[in-house]
Image 1 (cartoon, rainbow, N blue to C red):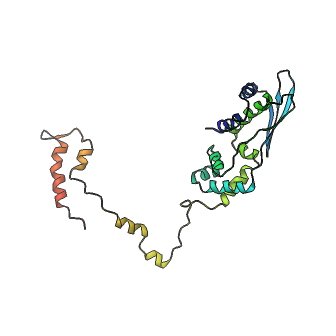
Image 2 (image 1 turned 90 degrees about the vertical axis):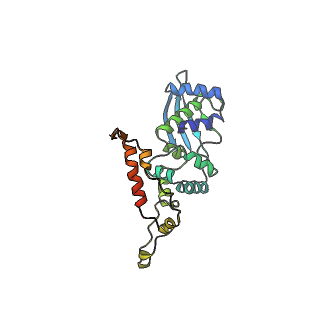
Image 3 (image 1 turned 45 degrees about the vertical axis):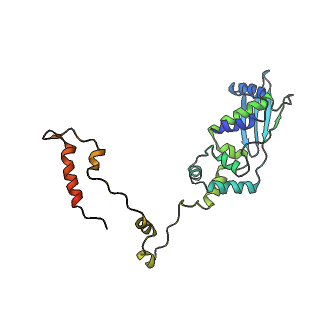
Length: 239
């Protein structure tokens, strides 16, 4: 799911579907203007049907600093997401990491103010801003973090400072005289592995398509098979 789909799925569970449908019409008609995302608040102006304009503000509860630390540790421990974040992406799957850490990037309740006389949850103008915001998240996913009070650079700095996950960018072991002459542990494990069963003579002739060549009216594979069997019988036994 995209960022807009995840966000709308969260807010539509809290909102009146009829008002959300009318708000989408407003947003698609480009009646939402001056959309601004700030820490814990989104503001915009929405043109009403009568030509008047209404100021709308959407608030979100702040994420506790301890929750941020848990989320950053969880992201740092996920090599793929960490690499994508450090390369400049904000994958929608990051929302799942937040949920797994016991918090959410999306509001659990709608905190909305509008200058109109409709006290619904949300009003049509507020619903329009929700849709405009969702689409803005697809254009710049880091706005999701900005609304939650975290800049892109704040998160990336925290990830750079966090320890790498096991197996990721592991430092080389220091080279010593003892270590240089020691048998690598990986080689010892390879020696302990059971040998693969021997391949029967002429196996390659069975799995590979032979060229369309005949030797004394015989297929090339049939003509070569005795030679493979002779080579196999002459080979020394493995130790």
